[in-house]
Length: 135
Image (tube, rainbow, N blue to C red):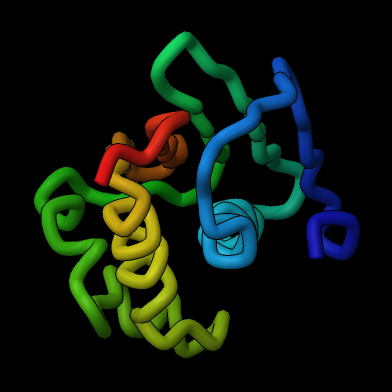
């Protein structure tokens, strides 16, 4: 999808991280963040993916140079079926479930997900997952 839209997909600071996670669910959540970045970034833009860790947590950052969101919309983007702009999703085929599922997956792993965005400048997601799951 990135190549088709002439979007540069940049992987930087990718550290090998070992954590107790449901690899299938977490990889779908990560893929969703990257695909959203590509979907909402205009041709010629970029999506950056970074993975880092400290002694307690793994950190994933997905940042794009896309269309961004208004600050007042950020509080609802993890709600099921919420779509920032219906026209935007009609064109791209979104259902309003992807970020909700991503959020649930991160919480299932006792992690957190934060978003910052500026309209017409881009969006950044920061995911934190504990390396060890304490039940």
